[in-house]
Length: 256
Ligand code: NDP
Ligand code: 8X3
Image (cartoon, rainbow, N blue to C red; front, side, top):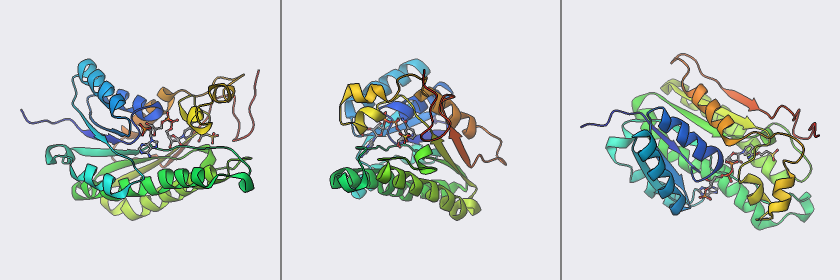
């Protein structure tokens, strides 16, 4: 039987926002293209989603920083999937370190710039032709409150998310003639693996990030993406800042 489900491609589906987004779209009948570097996690997710929701999951294991890996992976998508691809979620990203600018580690800077900016560009360039061909589609870019404001030690991460913010605005202009919606999602503090990655496996420091208040959870962002993706054809939600209730800005928290 010919597959008819819409398809969503999510980068960074092995954890956090990406994984929760895969789950909510699968629950609502989308076939999922799940990507990330950790193949074992992709396999576990595929087994779970196919068993629980009766959808199909195509796993693509690649590093968004490596342009030819991105291109090979995207070009390997069978036409029976790419023809139905309607949503791209550019979610893969990370912060590494939180040092004053002069104490920053160059390798950390490069990981953030290569993943958050260049990776998003490589994936977008490879996927957009599928959407353009259909003259419809929806791209979600995971920005951050760090793409709207800056904070001490946030320097390069904030710069990378300001770049995502600018790219969301630019993509919207470049793609409007093709009926392609672009939504920038800018969350505040969310309890995922983000802080564990930022603090290089230091669990105590990662946990301390969320002490004394209720942070966002991955499902809060997944539900928001699903809401924005299911507005009527003539409506685009351009930009959403989503904060924990106890967080008023990048730096102002009400902690108990
Ligand atoms: P997680 O660490 O839980 O998830 C990050 C995901 O990105 C993982 O699936 C990881 O997969 C993937 N990823 C990272 N580097 C690469 C790479 N080089 N190639 C392919 N995939 C990669 O973090 P979140 O879910 O919190 O973060 C998702 C996005 O949301 C990021 O862009 C982050 O900057 C942004 N964000 C997070 C906030 C937070 O407080 N949590 C707030 C605002 C924005 P794998 O390791 O398997 O490759
Ligand atoms: C992640 C949120 O405040 O740590 O983008 O930058 S923050």
